[in-house]
Image (cartoon, rainbow over the protein chains, first blue to last red):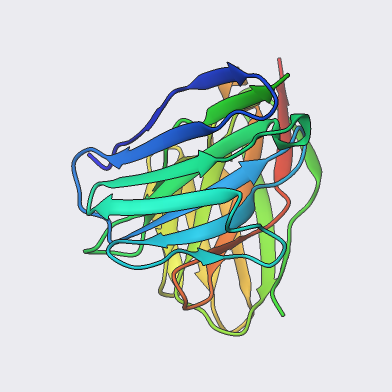
Length: 115
Length: 109
């Protein structure tokens, strides 16, 4: 149980384009999901907290107009990187928190490369 | 502020036991997590402690002392595949997790 999927697992795009990443909790409901970014050899950095039915909460320094988050249902959150640039190239990981408990489970991650 | 400390690197031999310590100072506490992360992959959940004491799950055990702000992850019968980064993370009460920088464990034959 407690499986979180992400799609796509990797994406390469041109500078200036937008990329959408989906995060799904497959066998549990998650009112709250989280989006992280991880650069090579660095720790996870929380970007934003995604709440079903309400606006996301962004961490300091994360541009909400650039990283659009939509938590459409109790099992789906999406992150759209708008007008992507090479410095946005990173490993993006979502996690979902079980409504019934405190554990958070991570998706497999999406590796974004912006050319 | 939130502060989580864990050693940067550890080495151990296959078949041995290793303990990875984590100390934390956070504004609140609603549970401590341990995750394993292999290079290039997302973290995988290992354990969750919210009450004091030892939680055992197969070869992995996790201990928590809330009064001391201290936890450890104990790995027994080490295998080569256990070489990974181990992340200590604290839920300070607002659902979000604060992560330590991770402990890179290298298991040698």
